[in-house]
Length: 523
Image 1 (tube, helix red, strand yellow):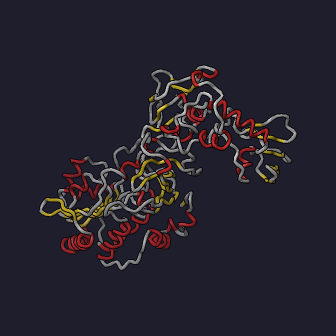
Image 2 (tube, one colour):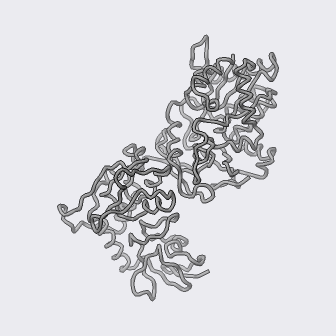
Image 3 (cartoon, rainbow, N blue to C red):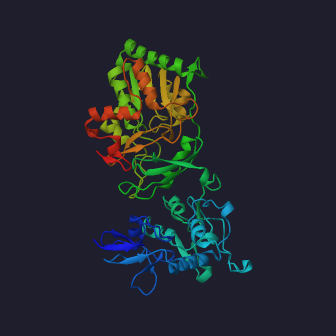
């Protein structure tokens, strides 16, 4: 391993490491725009210039590979003057859009100007070159060519990651800009990543545009629920409203990317939420209190099992539920109600669409977890639906907001065959409209737990803020329901449930929240 010295600090790095990455090892920040760890090295922004002893001129840190004995300086007057000069050239034609630019607050150009710039422009305002501003170039992206600093990150992403090559450089000199060919808009499932990797405000998200200033937002670690890939995300919120999801680095799952579909799944956590318990009385839906509704639900489920036998009761689980929630639900079904009618809704609308990068055909985050916990699906789910349709079920406990891929009309007709339908769900929909009792549960943003992705990696998601309205954590709902059915559980949250799960379920044996960590743990 070569050893080099950066600003007087010695560091050993693997062969092939660049100066830029070596500097990160010792906590030295080298400014850069064009470099991205998941893209090829371009070396065209020239912001990462550093002084290397015995080299006659400044070197680009992003492309210069470390050699043994190399001595690097990043804070000399020569370096600072060069970086300031590069920054001034970038700003010559750059518009002063900061007050209205969505990138303000997380803009590389803004940040480096405050650190290395703070100069007045020496270029006459009337001589500035103006370019097209608000351009809808397809997908989730709006292009402002005047803000672009030509770092080429977006061009390389579409060349090297998606392979779709929609963006190109056009013209030369100070008229150079990126754009699409006429009639050839962005046409891939990963356009939102362009806004993530753009270091300035040239490429912004149509969805997030003008919604909220980033300094008002708080963030937390979560997992995308759009499919079984389990992409790691940063969720950003203000108050109890989510504003966006951005990919969080996990080399074993999604690297630094996420798809456009998953990026918009946060909307379901804001819209049409179930926020208060509901009971149906003589055909009318009325708000209810938790203290009276849960005992009533437990009584009706137990009554159906005792009068008609356990097989007159059914439980439908959801692969949108966490491993911890599925574990409790299975125990309620098999141990407390004694029913064999347990299955999970393995199909949802949109199943089947996939690609060879991130998008999986299964549009649920935890189907693998449900299978590992022994909850039937496929033919078992179809048989359960057939039993309901045939009038063979007197009481149904349904977790989730859908019954497979059934339409609203089909769901209403099916559930009308069941005298008692209890829903534990997050959103208004065909199930909540047909249910005799609705127990509103917290969304993924409001609760914690684990999902098991399609590859068998168990990953944690964490709550960002308390449950909205009168909704409760589904673990709290299931524990109380189980205890009213005679369980005698003492669980006080997802961590205690996971400990019990890991002790009794072989696939999860030996796992802890600590061993799962930030990046997950394989089964």
